[in-house]
Length: 197
Image (cartoon, rainbow, N blue to C red; front, side):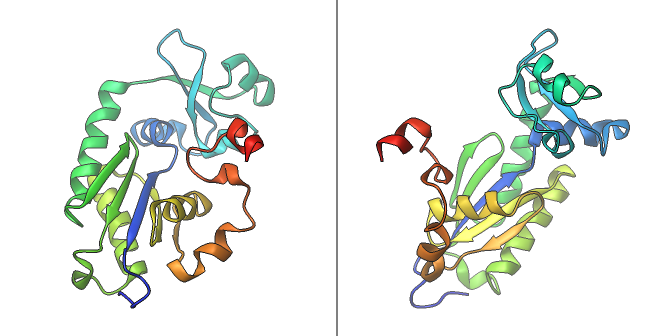
C-alpha cells in the first residue's frame, strides 16, 4: 500500500446528509424525496437536507419558508438528536476496527490515520471500500471517503466524491488536485479569510 513518498496515509470519512439520511432510512416513505431537517419541533432553521432537496438549491442555514419557495413540496422533519447521537457512536466504534488512530472531527466526520497499520491492508481503495462497508454494517447509511497523505487533501477528496463516493489523491498528486480549487474549498477558510488571502 505504501510507497516511499507516501509516508502518511490519512482518510476522511464523511457521512452523506447524515440527519436527513437517517430520517429517510427510518421512514421509507421519505426515500427519494426532498427532506429538510429543522432545529426542533418549532424551529424553522434548516440544519441539513437530503440530496433530493439540494437539487432544488436548498442550503443548510436557510429558513423553511425560503426552502418552500424553491421546493413547495419539501418535507420538514424535526431534528431527533436522541436518535442521531447513538448512530454516530456506532459508526465511530466501527471505524476503530479499521485503525485505533481515529480522530472524531464531528458527529458525522472522522479522520483515520493508517500510517501505523498499513501492512494490514492491500491498498488505498481496498481500505476505502472496507470503511464504507463497516459504516453500512453499523448504521445502514452511506458515506463518502477521501484518502491522501494529509487531512486537508483527504477532506477535499471526500467532499469532491459525494454522495457515496471514494476518491484517492496520492500525496504526489495533491498539489495538482488542489491548485484549481478556490481557497474556500479548504476546511476552515470562509469568505472573509478568503478575501484577505
